[in-house]
Length: 134
Image 1 (cartoon, rainbow, N blue to C red):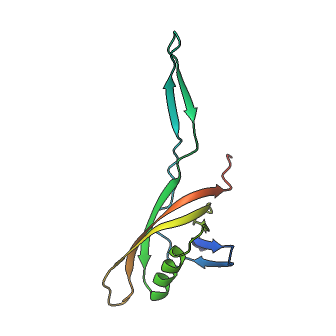
Image 2 (image 1 turned 135 degrees about the horizontal axis):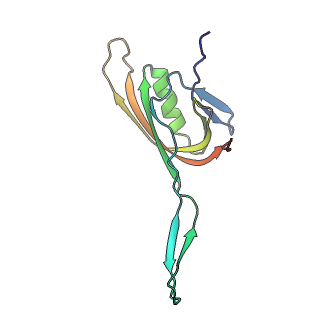
Image 3 (image 1 turned 120 degrees about the vertical axis):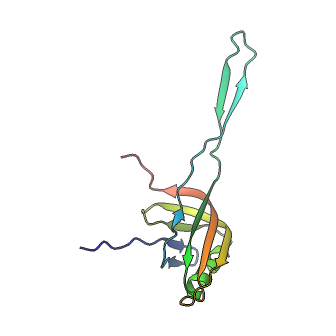
């Protein structure tokens, strides 16, 4: 039995439209979690330190991959150009609301694939759905 490959999918419920990656990104995609914690040393006799937790730091995620066709290239340019959050579902089934802030394609010469590019994209993650402990 052959496993079906899971594809990354971008969804824009405002339109509605979606794009399924033909080639998944090959690096990146996982969140680095970081809390904002500040401290204050009291002037009390024991000089205790008080810690305050603020809002979590907005997460930036970088992913990269390969494009082989003009259609793949144009689709990523189109989705980067949206001026709103979109829903990203990765190959592990993780769902994130993201806003693209950078798309860097680098053309790689290929006789077989004239539109071949290596690319890197960066986005802010505004929320992640379905994260529960098991």
